[in-house]
Amino acid sequence: MCKKLFIAATGQNCGKTTMSVSLMHLARKKYARVGFIKPIGPKIELFGNRMVDMDAALMAKAYGMEEDIELMSPVALHKNFTKEFLAGKIDPRRLEDSVVDSVRQLERKYDFLIIEGAGHAGVGSIIGLNNARVAHLVGAPIIIVTGSGIGSVVDSLRLNMALFEKERADVRMAVINKVRHDKRTQIIDLIDQAFAESPIRITGGFNYSPILADPTLGHISRLLELPLRATTTERSRIIHNIQLGAASSQRVVDSLLDSTLLVVTGSRDELLVTISSLYHIPEFREKIAGLVITGQTPVSNISQQIVEDSGIPYIRINRTTADVYTALKDDVAKITVEDEEKLNWIKAHAEQEIDFDAIDATL
Image 1 (cartoon, rainbow, N blue to C red):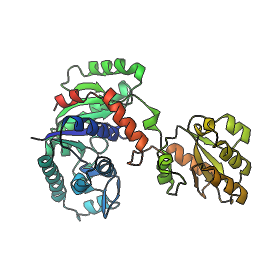
Image 2 (image 1 turned 180 degrees about the vertical axis):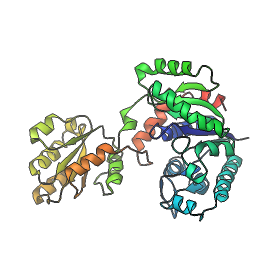
Image 3 (image 1 turned 30 degrees about the vertical axis):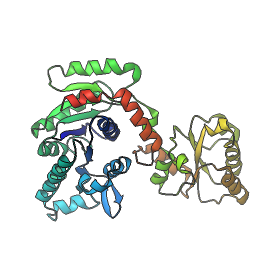
Image 4 (image 1 turned 90 degrees about the vertical axis):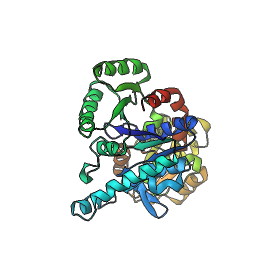
């Protein structure tokens, strides 16, 4: 008989996908056959000739489950999906049947099935398939992933649990994610006290890490929708700092921090040459992750040649430095299969920080 687990969240950016990746890794150590499904996919991408949810695509590629991709993303919300649904062009019963049928097929194939929700409990309500209803339809016990904090976590858990209870969905555990290592025990104990009268268990997830919070060079390339001149290894490098190259070259160099992406206008020849030259030195290679060269002013031929010869990763974009810097600062990185450094980090730290046996025991 297949065990099922529905991974919900109190909101966006709680680390739900990170939890799915880690639980897939840990479950495969205990169960021979482990599957995955993202019933409702609000963020989609092209997989072969089919549009599927981004997380389903990630799991299929990362864990060699490409043959299941149609079952792993039964309802992918394309651009005009909700408009067509509200106009009566999409049958709600067909959507519900598609989700349930996909889960049932995967249940027959696997010993353990991870079902990942989309955002908070109410996401999907517009099409009659919010997370709470989906979890009830497929009969899957739920763990809710939250961000860190105390009061805010308790508030968001109570708010989300109200809908789960309304839909008669079975919440078993809350996983407090992104906790500070030195506050981990205290935070978990206090939240546990707040739910002393509730049957749900409280446990800890991942400690906060900039490795998970920060983007990779490859992600920046996808965000800006422009090519990145870099090797495969360099694409997965994690950017811990984003800095404007607006000061003098010496001041920019002096203020470089660990793994910095420098945003600099193409007219700053002296800075481009300086940074490219320093990239050859191991001490500075640790600090310099790459360049985003901005503006419509062409880079001089000699400066361009020096940048090319240095091997420094870079993206060339015609937008202003201010626009690019704002876009980068406002972005929240989403894990993809290209982010090898992050995926390897998740798998390694999952074995240290996630108590899979405790989660498994609640199912």
